[in-house]
Length: 301
Length: 117
Length: 137
Ligand SMILES: Nc1ncnc2c1ncn2[C@@H]1O[C@H](COP(=O)(O)OP(=O)(O)OP(=O)(O)O)[C@@H](O)[C@H]1O
Ligand SMILES: [Mg+2]
Image (cartoon, rainbow over the protein chains, first blue to last red):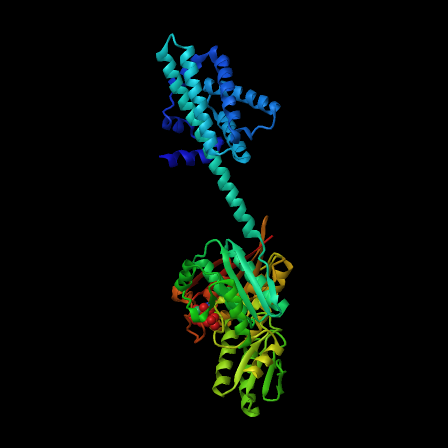
């Protein structure tokens, strides 16, 4: 079920199925009508809570670090007041969602952790409940309902912010992978005739092809007779990647250069065996140092 | 027919330098001449220099391996030298790896390989 | 038949035609900005397809067409003949299958070096192989 929510949220605020999500949060029309009952008390309650809330935040070293100066605090408090009015007005439309997600992404960027975020939201709600129950003590039943409704909306809020966190992280990871995969692989000459190629990152077929071409041209340019391919830094070696590596080494051999593969994990060794490679067809060494020694030995023979 | 691949004799080594892209019949012709020369000259080794060749497809590669095997049956060695980077890549992708035929970067290295071991 | 300028046709009958076809393909690939390795792959694919025509179908043709797209450019190679055709396509596409006592790598190898591969054949009516090689811009 949570998958349903996250996937529908991940689609972006534009085409969110809000009705479906409200059902999931048990957020009814009644709830949305209820919070409006705070009416003229809204600003008074809001101010009260916000003061208490920021006192709490600034009391904490980690939280306080997120505020530059008094002017910044004043600005954030004004934003918070608007936030509170929107919460109470319960006008939960696409614009509302977009705004909450924007705030979530600002938090993510500025390093507000989920713990800091949820912890302070919890404090905020707690204070809010107290203040509302106090101010509406002539009708505790109604006050209780109002608080419960605000809680639902607040949780809906939090889910939006957290989804944004996850999305932002996901995007950051993908961007880093893209960067890595576009990084050309260096071809280093260890000494005349001996090349070292440290392969780092993800080896999709496009990049594997580029790597092969670079290696082969490097062999020609440096007149190399041996190559050490170090795959310690390769993220995942499945059988497709293993195949690319084998093809690369076979092509190097056609040009008269022998290769040594180093940095194989146990899993990698296994996927190599799966694509039909045996130790004798392939020179492999446990670590880079031994790989280089092996290549030098092979050159002498 | 003009000879497209001169075969030079250097001591006990025959050097066949392919000068241009060869047709299938040119390659068969080369195969024939190399085998004749190995016998005639009592050659101990053959180097085929393919550095001027822009592609080695399945037929070309198959014929090169056949030449290597027959030369070996005559008790001589055969080394293929000068496979270019792009040629090596397309060969491997086609599935052609010449597994048990010695290769070297260029003619010098090929000669060194023959004299060294 | 009139071909648009982006289409080149090489008749295939003798083994020298195989050379002409692959040189034509390499030149076109170079003009279109294909990398050196990709030029070699285009030439190799043409060589395999053209040779199959000479060996198994006697004669046919290789057609080279250029495909322009916003983010890439491609060469479409069509090899056509009216020879005996291929009875068992699946086998013909498997590594090592050959009725010509050869390596049986021409078709499966070509399939590996191009980006799109399509083959149709009806026994008695010949073979059409269409492949596309793309170059990223
Ligand atoms: N144009 C064609 N017409 C009829 N049969 C064909 C044609 N092309 C291929 N074939 C059949 O398909 C088989 C496989 O072709 P493929 O090119 O893969 O291998 P091959 O030509 O036998 O060997 P290689 O290409 O490795 O030298 C051939 O042996 C032949 O039986
Ligand atoms: Mg063939």
